[in-house]
Image (cartoon, rainbow over all chains, first blue to last red):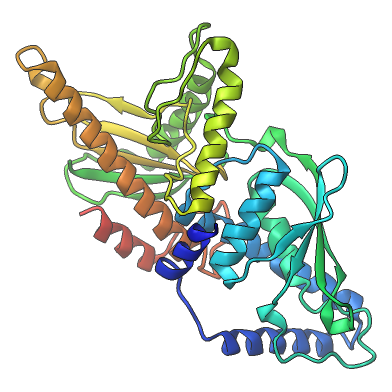
Length: 183
Length: 200
């Protein structure tokens, strides 16, 4: 199914060694923890805002290389994020689950998480959402295509949960910001 | 087709990048360029609202290659969403699509001296291309119209190709420049040289 993400991943993205990526991200988180004196709420916030700034730029590459058109339902949005977005940038395909009744909220389940390979959290780091940057990236990228969303972690295998799960909720569609000239 | 110049407009219609790639176009004053950018932005927005009351989209939109089956104008909006979801199915299934979302706005201006093409991304960035005119536009009367139309489409397709390459280059060299702030003028030598390469 996910050939496109696969193809973009194979043909048009720059690749780096995944261990280098994991270790670099780990160093960033570790440095933030020491900068904020292990105040993990602040670390989460900072990771989220770093992710946001990545997301608002990353979306252009995503659109340029895939040619995705505007989605009309959140189901479609979810499918594109999972099968194309995650595949293209991280070479993973998370699963979608737990749709809310109004179809505005769903869960992303990460079976593998390249950010968190080799990671063990210290026992006092209960408040830290290690991969919080992903939330920011999704929020930033979707904001640029005029979707105001909230994204947050609910479970993380690093904390002993059985799965790693993110929630994504659509707050509103920023209709005023949709550029003229679309259908 | 010769590309004279490439302009990039931010969401608000401000000129953030300008590159006169090939000589052949005379220079305007700096202020005139800003006015030109703003005017195209405005005309594009107004043109998107301008449509016949019995509106049917052209059978071959700039953004997609497929014919859209449209039974009547009443089913128009649903047909559009059908088309859009097929586009995204294509994306999921591995077919490449053109990232241009400029479907109802101003797409091109053709004159005897130059052509203008307008591309818009989903995020609202506009790329504008100024090129040499259609080669046989002067002979419309004497030539077979069919040939002329093919030529027009060819130039249109070329512009489409160039736009895609510019957009990819923009996402790689401008978006990944840590010193660039969004919506601000682009001053980036690497991007300049890449743009120059692909528009030769």
